[in-house]
Image (cartoon, rainbow, N blue to C red; front, side):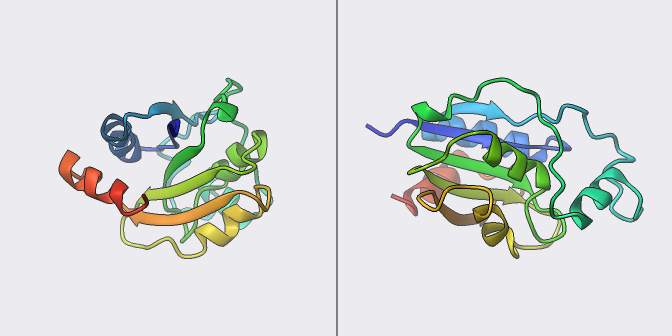
Length: 159
């Protein structure tokens, strides 16, 4: 039997709500990727070139520190990985998470929330942070807090 984890990073709470509902529907464990230094509203102001998120996203080598608790990735075969889309890719904190654990031979299905853009280069950008044996699949943008029925249908797309 496949052991499943829903891991997510949420700056504003939108992705968290989707992740929590997805975990219930998938009967999966839930893990929040937490920045060591939480993001303030000013940090997330994408219109300010000097905001923390803008600076991090301009630097592809940026790896914001995360809270060091153990996600026990070794216990899981399938990981749903959620995040908000920032600048057409995953926030660099997702790369931090992927580089902190061994995802060898794991299947990762991405889901995201977005104010208007798609995945863009998210998959290609994240593949650089995992072993070649890790399968990363572009899922979907799951905005507007999908219903449990919609989430169940979405999960079946990847069976």
